[in-house]
Length: 203
Image (cartoon, rainbow, N blue to C red):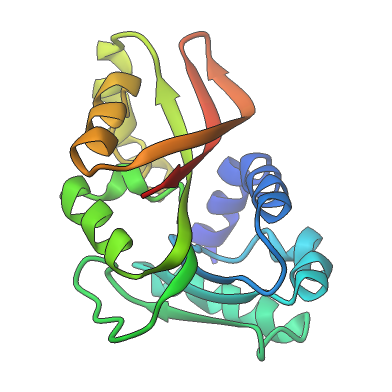
């Protein structure tokens, strides 16, 4: 319960903003793999949008505590036919022959150690013409203080924010994976050198 309250406190602004923009980018009836779906906070304001777009969402997350809250919201807003969530490690999971129109890294990419492996796996489960979309806080300049602080926030907030993501390193990862960024949608400034954004990527 405390974890969920802290999650809402830290992400109550960014999460609904990111998902609102995300849903504006997806085509109706899209199948979506949401990596890092968390507690489903966005459903409180966007459940009608999920229904209107007739989306099929498969959410995965490492935290069963958060997923328990997410399942309650799925049931509350009558989304059980459109949305399901599982306690899975994306890299270790077997998705079989399932393909998705969109693979969404919902503030989860900085938490993944094998980022190159994650990109290759995401490419493999995309349907033809599919896209990856990242909700990502990008750091433009060297930030040693943030490098030190960000991994330690989980000890005071219960939320793992991962490590600092530098724009140049991120762009190199995409280039090495032969992926092309097609659009950026700015969400909010985190500090003078960092900004949260949605990044659309195509193979």
